[in-house]
Image (cartoon, rainbow over all chains, first blue to last red; front, side, top):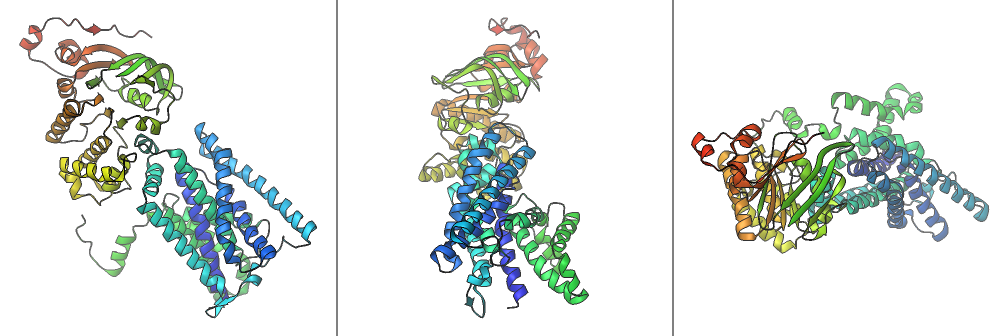
Length: 312
Length: 257
């Protein structure tokens, strides 16, 4: 597999997880979670610390990554989000509160980096996690394992939301909290579950991202515009749209820059970050509700020349 | 019995209900009627903890309902069927019924859902369809079925007959009467189809501008030509109106602000 495609697949998988988490939190609590940035960075430092102190492949620490991300989500919910939701705070207030939380997490990350630097003489501020990777099926293991991990995790999440009583209750609460409450569903539990899953997805996304990009204390902060771009491209009101949006944004950055550099020369690589954002803007101009708002079925039928059957 | 004393409530800083007293006798149907903007829906929202209660007391079977989370009220056996947003549009009909019975054991949910689809056969036909794709009438039937799923002690019904074809509306009203007669459920219903609601009701309240204009027997309100024509648009045959004795029930003066 070409290195640019391998990196693109890893990055796209990471963004699909992170953007899915942003979408889930926005749909459930109407909170644009800026703390997703540092939650993702925490994910990277969990696998880094695991590999440095205990050895082995980075992938064995991914369950721990999810737990740490979930914990950060729970702290954010009980410490900030829940009290503000009870006071019926506006969307802007909810969003800005997560920015404050993000700055606190960033300080903790910097302190941890200082601790590793001065106590263990490590260099945690510039890490290439792919040096700890191994080869699988003739390519890097990350380009096989991480897309697979994303697919398995998101399939599990889908089954949880569709097949389990609590998952259906989550969807019900997201859609109509008043009716859900009248049905006996405790919205508090649902919102906490959303922060557990959303936080876990952010950390998993960050850990996965560090296998394609240099790991730094601002890994999440530099990539959060793309996490949001993915969520917005997905339409913000569909979890599946957010996941797809994240994947498209991530893959476009790598595939787009490769295709354009072949056509126009390597100077275009300097503008690689603009490509997914232009894609997002262009898509939203044509489809204001994002990828989730595109009538995929009728579009497919139009393209293939099939007539629409009589629906039930 | 549901008892409400001196209720003042609304949304945010806007007060809609003023010093309201309501008593809904156990195992009876209490009908709340009145013109648009009278505060009928706000009364139900206040009971369910959705509207802001500024002052007053609310009790059901001796325990207070004030400052309770909505899901805690559902646990107390209170079922609420809202006028709007009364189904989960993104869920299938079956999932809607399952969510309505969220607090019930799984086996009972299945049994009860079957009963509901027997009562409303159209729901059986669309059981795996998303509720958002149903017509207005079909959605209302689903909402009623969801309200009945829980085996409630107290049902709060908001404009049940809206969107329903007359024949279905009549069926639903008869069902409400059956819930009282056979299952002994206490019912507080807000209804625009005032005449039919008052016919099946035991107690009635006429709300005007957030206050009580009439409190007493439903039958007496139905036979009060002045109030019926002025606030409810019910016109009665002249002989019937004149044949009635003047109502001796509580007819309160207009609230002065």
